[in-house]
Image (cartoon, rainbow, N blue to C red; front, side):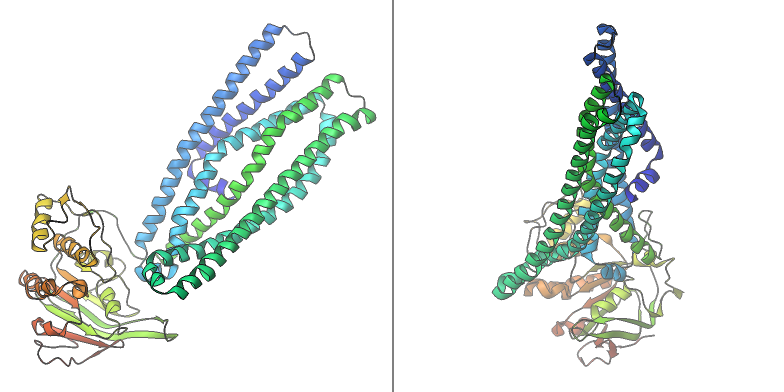
Length: 551
């Protein structure tokens, strides 16, 4: 089983100790059954001795059960935490383009639902171990009473096990189908949260979304889950039928075929009835373990997929110095991807560009011309499929790409604003943040204390200002703004172009601005225009020195 392999590789010592505790618990249970049987049959042993033995075995069972559950509970939480951290490390190391192809929904369902299923199964393992040990201890006691009877009953057990295995295999198949539907369901959940405005504005779209996406997928998911649970229920009923058949054989058939003592017969019936509870516990846990098995395979598949795509070095810590550079060059860079609207491949490039410190460059072009893609290539988020990026003459490769990315501070059109100034420190961080809040006219709405924003529940334009504040505090050599001014009122739009951008340029920063605000093009040192993936000569005469290619 994948689950047992995961536990074994995570902590062999814990698994061995838990197994030992479970075996001892099972032995204590077998001893308790034997003592009860002796007391009922008046075997002649002193009652006081049997009573003290009963107390000792009862305490032994409680202590071993507690030990195994407490130990595995601690292990399971540590194992799940390590599993999550390992997955997140792999996600952080995967290039952005490949991560987008894997899909957000698949990553989210793995980090949430799959990990939860594994956690629930791990927490149930101690009880299952104890129940299995009780069953083994009971079987050992039955063998001690009469090994001939036990062997004769093994045939009946074997027939029942074969039928049980067939039913459970069908249930596991249904669980796999349900898990596939869950990926689709999470994609619909994401569409619900991110497309809620569009759904509210369009009645027919809203109805079709609920009917065709949510309702259809949830019905399929429900159908497979119900089918799996029904099969697990059938398997339990089958095992109970087999169980009662076994007791019937012991009570009514064996005494006719073979002489069985009253003590042996009582012991068999009493033990069988006692073992019914642990057997039901083991069987009911199969559904839990089945889900965990499917979830763990999904986690491993995602981990393998992430590992396959992770080719670059991407450390999580270490000092980062905002190193200066003299020249950043793109040499015949090409990048292509599938264009969904036209069912064709969009090709960006070949593009040759260069940037130097203290430059203010505007990047313009129509929608779909490749501006955002080019910005992600320049910042190292997308990898060129051909051509090269050179920093001061040295090629940017998998070995140094993460260090190259540390040159950039960016506010993308689809930016994310963290609640904290993560990764930023230094003396006077809060004071510097407050200075920028005043410049951005946000001091009355947002405060910064201990490196955290008091709130981010402000308008989209104000959130962009907070993202700009974060970029300022990063103080990197190269700044990128993707349509930053599109959500700002005229006052702040003018402030952005006439004060903030020139201030960055005066500080020796390289600034690349993706924009459509042609009234401010004259402020740029260069205006670069893209037309369906190709650099073209700019048509804006009022701008400063214009270059479509500077290499």
